[in-house]
Amino acid sequence: MPTADPPTRLHADPRATSRPRLEALDGLRGLAALGVLVLHTWMFSYGDLHRPPKGFLDLVFGELRLGVQLFFVLSGLLIFRPFVAAALDGTRGPRLTRYVIRRAARILPAYWAALAGSFLLLRHLGHPMQIDVGQLPKFLLFAQNQFDDTIRHLDPPMWTLAIEVSFYVTLPLAGALALRLGAHRNRQAALALAVVAGGLLSTVLAVQHAWPETLSTSLLPHLVEFGAGMTAAVLLHRRTLSRPTATVTLLAGAALIIINSVWHAKGLGPQSSRSLVGDAPGIAGIALVLGALVASPIRATVLSRGPARWLGTISYGVYLIHFPVIVFLRETERWPDTLPRQLLAVMAVTLPAAAFSWFAIERPAVRWAQRITTRGRAPVPDAPAPAPARATEPRRQKTGERRALRPQPVES
Image 1 (spheres, rainbow, N blue to C red):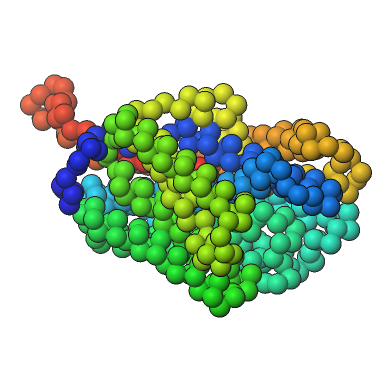
Image 2: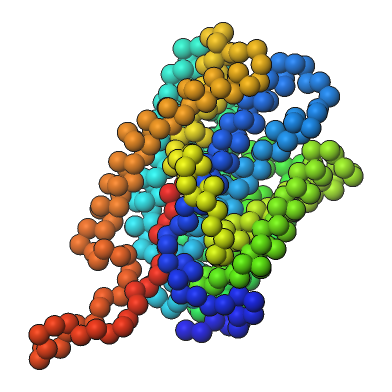
């Protein structure tokens, strides 16, 4: 079915969404995970120095926090893509059982393993962030953010996973609504922007009414990030940016990220304004950068190959494991004296552990989910079957029909 809006500088291209994900996004995710590791290592190092006046590098390290926003925008873009593709193409939407099994297999095994490791480590060390056995079900069910006695405990960065899983749970509702709206890009964009508006409204309410942390760390304020990714998925489906347009988009996105970071890091203007607006400019910039990478002829070789791509493969493990590693090094008097050595020590333990998590836990779980959700189905999920050969012909007739180009849920 035709879309509601004609292409302008964007031109329709059925091949634009032929791959389920781009290798460059893997590399970007890997660098973001490494950035979060650097951020948390720097936070301990900076605190040990009794928080002196921040220099340029301190400001840069502090703004690596935007890696979390990048994760959320990526999820909105990549996980909503199959739903909006089905809606705009007029095809069948993703099967709910397949969606649930693959999301669960990607997230749960490594998460539960990291939970068990963190629990045993902190109990052994007698660390104040440890929890009782009776509190574990809250973490197992991603409910730790909703209780004062568990939030920021055990493995503090896991607070973002509770939000991520909340999005996974609610996304099929948005997907069902997208399918009802049909092949109208403007309507689909309005749906995604409504999600963004809900997040912006929640941010304002959280500031004006002083929401407790148990509520401000829920999905509601972070709908901005997920909605931004969803909007990008709608606008970029079956479209390709020209190289000049992609370059301008990439530069504009980078500029917004830098402006947002300088604004917050330097504390420019009233605090109330920064609190109300939040990281909205930076989130918009992240969405633009992702759009330029997804729908353009630009080949981000640095991101799609080599170390960055490898980091993307093990990024989930890096995110889950690095904080307990920091705690272990500090509590066992193995914490070096300088930030460079601290980073090397943390990475020396985290990266091999994350690689083990990928090969021993994550990849087997992903492959198992792929096997059971494709059993008895065509090799290409949701692809239309080829036209049958006529009985009078010895060979199958070529129909020229193209298989539906539908992205699969990304491994995050």
